[in-house]
View 1 (tube, one colour):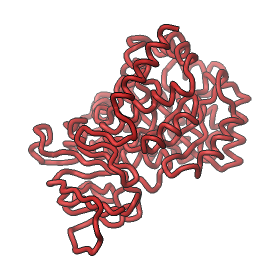
View 2 (tube, rainbow, N blue to C red):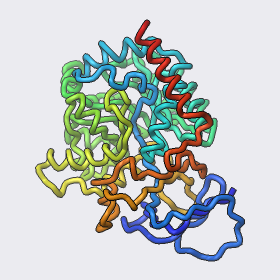
View 3 (cartoon, one colour):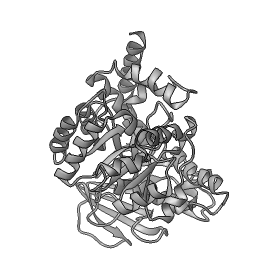
View 4 (cartoon, rainbow, N blue to C red):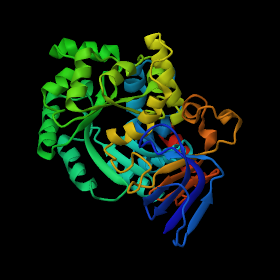
Length: 424
């Protein structure tokens, strides 16, 4: 299968932030050429004249809980702990694997409309999430969500072995829910797995000030310091949120080669605070961006997350030059791919996976084109996404989906499940 995208502005994210004019050739799921137009004897199965629109690597949603679509707008305007313990956990206890399968599909539709070509999903039943991703042709990295109430370190280890190499669109990383929900014994078991597999570990980390205070009271250390002392980060990993981190925490991230995944909309909505993004950048920590789940955001929109990442940093630092928009675009693409260990999905270069998006520049919010990358971050929106391709297959184009099922059926199933759960 050969695909040609031509007459395009292309932002490869492999060098500087200047788009080039040219075309992209794709063989099956892999990019084989990016550059100026040139003759070819290839018989093209698919060709798209992009009419000067912008092609760039797909966004990576580096932290989410996809199947929480059923809680969208259900438990809003509550502080984090009340939201989590009084509303979310009781409803999640009613979920089945089949529920999570269908609810994940709804999230995938939204990812595609937002130019997201891969997600880093932490939820309850990886088996059903994997099947939803394969059935819709979506790229998913999963991580364990073990805590004192669900899953186990042994089960996370089994999933790690099962799903790495299981399917080209699927991979799995070690992980647990959070320090405050996971006992030391489980953490030590996970650390042993990290050592066994030389694998990174991912978790919610320092999301709220109360979480950090509680950990210091119990252990004398911040969550980052405590988890590192248990050897969980000997082989790297990542922290979701990392709003309330110290200079010593940041140094641990740097020394361990860890990633920080910031989730600005969720942190705002739950009044958790503003992450020190500029300090993390200055320290050389890899940064990525996530939407978090649709219960705490509530939309799965990478454009909103990018704008908030830079705008909030400017307010926090009282410096309009803080966290340049180009750095944010790097976080949403290359940084996310690195955090998720999708090493062949970082850039648009020969040999990379054909995970890309096309943004319509012939829209009022993209004109004039003084600076395309700044336009994407500061004025871009989902309305500009006209094509989303994953592994060489166009899964979304001009409002239409190719996900193996009618979107209306996915909507109807999600609403049916939500009604059933609320009635129980």
